[in-house]
Image 1 (cartoon, helix red, strand yellow):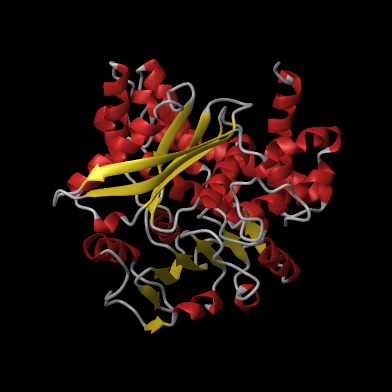
Image 2: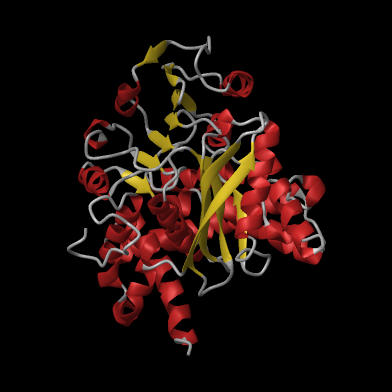
Length: 428
């Protein structure tokens, strides 16, 4: 990668991580951008990166320090938008890539945001509730100089939730001296959160997956589905598919891989995971599989909804699914993309498949500004319409240009961003 791109000094050229995956995706789309390719380097450089120290006093009186990040990749089309994750393996490269995918995602579904992302390098399970609150508040204060309702709007991501967003909103508001509900989305309903937001990403996966299945001539009713990750995205998507008549035959999370050829009871499994924290120990299974065998499960649709770089050149050939719905961000490497395409597997990329969350975050932001809130039915109808229209547009580009859905989504997303860059021009 270092021979093809100018790697910034703050990344190790030989270990560029997820950022290198994103750069390769941009390389693949560049030949289709026409005169806009003049501006393509804009997409290869984050606009702003803030690295902060997050010190907190622990419950035992000791002091701990954590690395925090907020990356604003591009704001040509509007304020930055993207989640905040708490994970022990968070790196700058990862947050850069995630912020860049947010740029493409927001543009592909045509919501008026740029791309941003944040994170703290911490295992939140090692902190008490009080320590987690103090860490969240300190992090919010540190990044407060670059976030705001019209600058950059964080949201939940891996290991963060409504409570995290409530702490962030309150901290920002106290520092500003006013209640600023629009500074984050994914908030509790009592603080200006939106109905339907918690289920939005999983619902978007279901809507787009149903559209993709129809294009493939596959009936959702009776379809066999395997899901990796059974949290807010994978769990909700699995429930909606099961309600539509599909069979959830395999589920994998950090606790292991469970299988049932006639379909797992999704509602009971959701209750089990809510109580126990993982799928481990669930009784309604036919078999507990080794984790590596998950990818070889006989299924029609596979939903990777965990972390990035899960489907690689090592396991892509094992996959038997007809359709892959990327519930997670960046779960498929470019090498695996090529293998899957040669196998005839339809990969519905993350920038479309999991865009339901940011779409309803947009609805929440609009509702906060207007102080007028919609019903859940109105939100779900609007979400479904936007997701279907976005998928239809991407499918049309795929047909016209004979490219993958990912390349088609990037053509649409990158073109909109670079058109905005071109007409705005360079200042000064």
